[in-house]
Image (cartoon, rainbow, N blue to C red; front, side):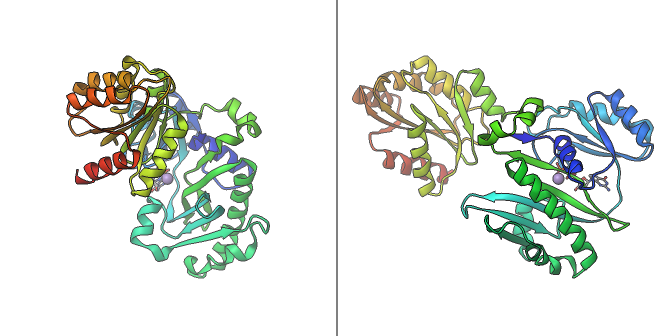
Length: 378
Ligand code: GDP
Ligand code: MN
């Protein structure tokens, strides 16, 4: 569960992390009122659950208060990466001396919490790690030891050995770590954490994601949160009656069973191929249901290939194949389709697909290799 910037910042403020003065506005008129209270140049920020708002027109600095209403109207009608804004955060504009980056993330590979800090903030941390890897520090925390001063002291060189800033940063890291623990976060991020002209550190942005498995422990947040916004493709899936999981990559996996889908994902990973989304048909899929499923996943712009992995039991392979054949015309030409059919009425299914010139196999690994090489060829 992701939180909006304004929600994350409410929590930051509760823990004593500096934020700008400001408030959430739902309409251009409200934005104007908040700006009038601030009484000087403001920043208007679209409240969506994705980053990169700055580049997408979701962050506007307005120096003249008479321009606020119009700018707010524009932001409210601008979708960011497919999301409609949930409001505008109207903030007092601050003068930035330097932008820093700070996050605390659970690193699944290392099975540890990691603090990531960079003296290059304001841009995507992936970009910084490519262009200025020497400007990033990663500090892994042993769960039993917890966060200690010496961890943070390691950041001194990245701060030009400025001990005054280090001590301020130390306070913020400790507070952020408490938030991370208290709210069962997968990530808390401040990007940019800004150093102002008068030497203060201010959280200019805020991102928080709560582990969904901990929602029962975060009841108050879950109840008050309008932050449970799903990915557009997951929402489209839900409306069509499917459970869709959005991931990062180019293959869509359609299968009859979540376990089957996950093992397919593992196999694709073995061949270094990422998965765009997973759709579970569950048992007893009819051709109509298959057609509906294809309609859902082809709306995901990341998809370059669809891999059907069907293990027929109650589900009949020939029914699935009829659905795929029926939907073929509606699948964009740049999306390849491969199918692995096994189990009930397998051979009928394979024949139906062969008739429409589609690749079908009984072997999963062969099918995976097939889609990987097809998609890699472009
Ligand atoms: P994001 O693009 O979604 O990450 O949105 P941010 O909240 O990080 O804002 C993007 C950028 O807008 C920041 O990196 C700053 O450069 C700029 N910005 C945001 N707020 C202010 C502000 O109060 N003053 C100044 N000078 N720039 C700001
Ligand atoms: Mn940001």
